[in-house]
Image (cartoon, rainbow, N blue to C red; front, side, top):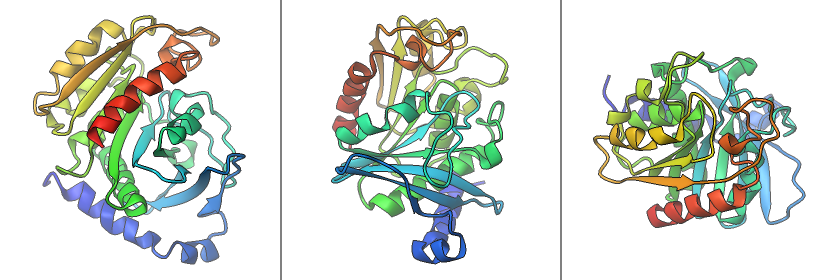
Length: 278
């Protein structure tokens, strides 16, 4: 399969969303406004058609004047429990709970749920999920026009980010951000090294917290991850420190693994990199 095939297929599928109003008539739960108290940003729910006929529910959070879009790929099982009215059952993950902070820095975010709330463990490095990320990239371009599109994954979601970026055509994404990436084989039986990191040609930022105690995402592996991006000519490692623990497990979202308590610091640092590549 040619490298640009997933993006071309995804782009064609995304055209099915035009006009969006037509889908709203046939499917009342699609393209619905979500609840948000901030008048300088909006949240909407979209159902994105995929190649196999399934629909992927996606949360879009957008500031008034976005400078770019970040596709945010959650960790864990990937299921955030996104409802048609915008309610989220599992909102602790770093990329979910911080979406308003990214909006304040000028970036729109797209956060996908899983199909029928199925677990993504063991499936993020698959060709099928590369096509899913490709559909999200195409949708982001459709929504934001010529603005830069980035892919950001956290923990297990970094596997999906690597896989999607490795199979995205040149020029379709402005960069990839990997945060607290799973680099040691665990229960999911896949790591960022399983997802073709050498296929990424876009700029890459690898973020690691020195205080992360998650056994499958050791911070000392950050430079090994960076070295695996052999095709990209622009790879940077960002080390941070700090955070507090509220979760019971070291790999939980409300720990240093999820930047709990240092969100602003981490997002500021990542945003500076995004700004330089937007």
